[in-house]
Image (tube, rainbow, N blue to C red; front, side):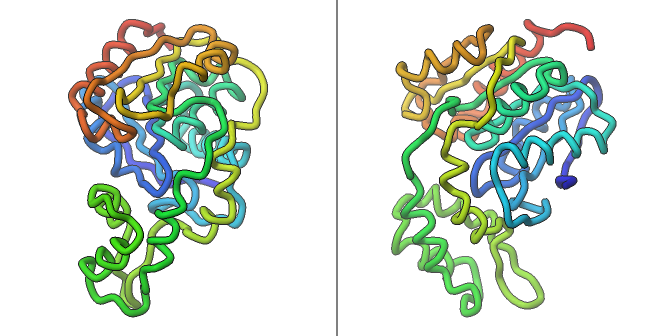
Length: 258
C-alpha cells in the first residue's frame, strides 16, 4: 500500500513518521525547519490523514507499506525519524531493513509494550455524534465529556474533516480500536539495528524509563539519548526549536555519505 507523502527541500532524504491519531502535519514545523539541508518526506501512516484505510494494522504490515512507499519514491536509503507510534514503526523498519536506514531518531517511545493509555480518548471520539454536529465547537464539547485536557482535544480535532456529506474523522477510528493492542505492543521483529540511533525523551514524560534501557541497548547498540526539559510526550510540539536542534546536530555529527 502506497502512503500519502508530503516532501520539501533538497538533499539526502529524511523521513518523518507521526504518532497515533495524528497526520503528517503534526511534524510540519520540524519538516520545514530541516528542509534547508535535507529532502524531508513527511508521511501519513496507514489509517491516518490522507493515506488509505485498511482493515489490518500492525507494525509488520506498516513496515511493508513504508518500504513500498519509499520504493515508489526511488528512495533506497534514508534517515528515519518517528514520534510515539511512528517511532515504533521507525524502529521496526530499521531492524527489518538495517541497510536502508542511515540514521534513526526515536522521539519519546521505547521498543517495549505499553498499557492502555487511551481509554478516555476512544470514549471521547466515540461520543462525538458526527451525523449531528454542525461545527468543531460542538465536537469539542462532546469530546470534553471524556477528555478534560484541552490540548489533547485540539490535537484530535485537527483530524476532524468537513465533507459534502458532513463531518468525519480522517483517521480510521474502527481500525485503530480493533488493532490498538497491536499498536501498543513492542514491535514484533527480531534482530538489531547497528547504525547511529538517537532517542529523545520528554523530561516530564513516562514513555521512556530507566527500566527500558536494556531493551534499547540490546536492539540498538549504538543508541544515545537526549532529554528535553520542560516537555512531555509531545516534545516536538512543545519545544520545536530544541527538538530540531537535537535532530540537526545528530544528523550532521553521525553523517556518512550515502
